[in-house]
Image (cartoon, rainbow, N blue to C red; front, top):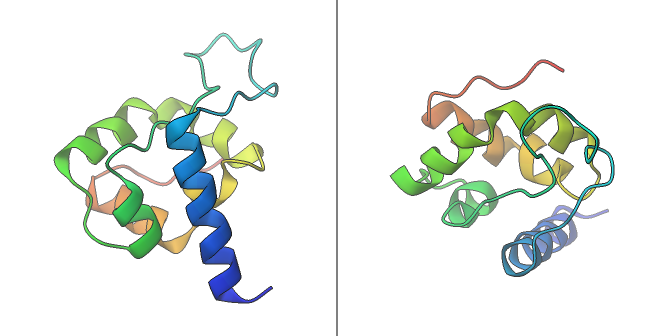
Amino acid sequence: MKFSTLVCITFLVVILSSLAPIKSSLVENSVKPPCTDIEITGCVPAIILGTPPTAECCGKLKAQQPCYCDFIKNPAFRPLVTSPQAHAALGFCGIPYPSC
């Protein structure tokens, strides 16, 4: 798959997830905080384009830190957490990348 196609697909997933959060059946019975939605409002430029994340974005990423391994296991969320831009955004916000 070409890189531009992957970027377009990821962008669509980001936009759609911000309009209607995706529910994950993989983690609904978890005892951790609910990891069924990924909240990336304000993080789209950082995750898609690699620009520095805003303070709002860093706050949302830090709040969701316990859910990253569940997000990586979910095919709908995986590109939003495992991309090089996501790695950079986490690093910029001082969040270690999860070792699942």
